[in-house]
Image (cartoon, rainbow, N blue to C red; front, top):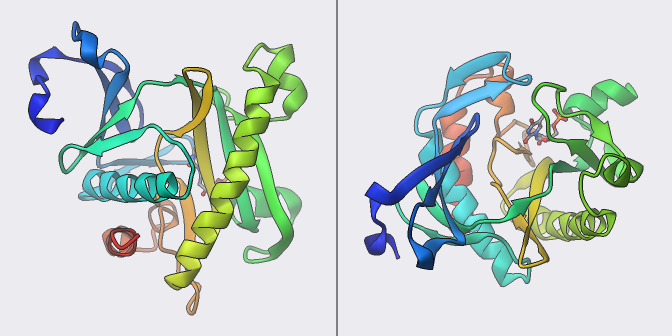
Length: 245
Ligand code: TMP
């Protein structure tokens, strides 16, 4: 597929904090496809902290591609089609649900603060949260009653997404555990493709918290958020692990 891409037809349809999305303007056979370009830009705290993680675009493209392929093999359908360059992948073009689904196994980040628990406390069972995707509002947490009330999406689709998110948690927790890493929490986004609820967006150290099982050292974007240093090394470690999956 990579060789059949005519870059002259790429039309930017969205630029976010970490990725740029392009569609294939005027190409009938690619009307259901998107090209995602992963950037090195890094932001935190809803864009208040800005920086660059050298080669993050390459790391995150590689990690997402590996994890999407791995999940597909485990029966989790997702938008990934093919990695086409160091920083680019080809995906299906989904109608995105305007919701972020966050799955948590261990207290960290905003939940540790909100519930007044020490970071590192393991929950008795996974926590799942829904947040309305809005930078202006700081992605507020919502519940299912908001979905219909604000016409955000069909609540049945959100329920399907939640179920898939919990399955993904089991699959990724096992995979990373086998590789000496604890999956603390992560964020997923879903969309509709031909009426099917399908995993989309990215799965990377930007969107997951990963801790070393022995040392509890952070191997994710918290190293950038909290100025812990060795950010690139952390991303490279996850590239190495996921390239084996
Ligand atoms: P939080 O503890 O800051 O709410 O983050 C929970 C998880 O979600 C963490 O793995 C990072 C991820 N996340 C994103 O991917 N995007 C975001 O905008 C935020 C706030 C968190």
